[in-house]
Length: 81
Image (cartoon, rainbow, N blue to C red; front, side, top):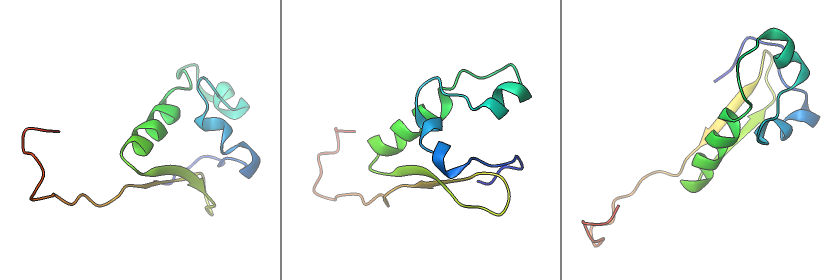
């Protein structure tokens, strides 16, 4: 997903994944948001064996979510998640 904003500076990219973090540009633009969405999204990705990070983009911020491919184990017990 790529946004249409000014992007996120490389030295701030990990900061936005910290709880309650909001960059100055986001604070000026709107009053909403708590700074929890990206940390929660990353935690979910990591719990599923994946990653969520920000990569370089020609416009805005490019969030890259990678999740492992699901392979059903035919020998797995069917009453488990």
